[in-house]
Amino acid sequence: MKAFFSWKLIPVLTAGLLLGACGSDMDDLDKFINDTKALPGGRIDPLPEIRPYEVFNYTADAHGFRSPFVPDSPQVAGGPADGGTRPDESRSREFLESFPLDTLRMVGTLQLGDTSFGLVQTSDGLVHRVISGNYMGQNDGRIIAIHDSEIELIEIISDGIGGYLEREAAVALAD
Image (cartoon, rainbow, N blue to C red; front, top):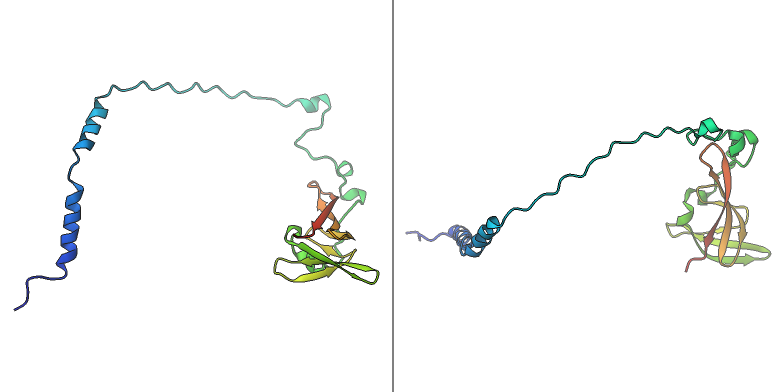
């Protein structure tokens, strides 16, 4: 004869005991709810008044001022018509130009004869030698000087209206 007791009954009995314990002694909660409902209601402030939008007509161009919504002419902005600074599209790209300048770290210098080399580490951990005239960074950064504490560059960046500007940059010796 099999026993009446089954191991499957244990979880059912445990769940029943736990649920039974949740419903006991809620008198203090009921008292708090009834006390809160008995309090007088407060007054809600009215919504703030919404003022209508005031239209503004821009009339500075009628007085001879330049419109801020139209770009300067290319001759004034240093655009392509003046033959100014431009990236050399025919130049072969160097390996360090595939990395953003802020991901490159100067880790030292090397002197061989009269030539000073800068040692630059890429984000993948490889160290490369560079000299003045090499390029690095994604903005056509040409190395102009290598010092013990930094590598100086001149970058060519877009001015946003069709022209280009030269900007000084540097990669400092990493700590």
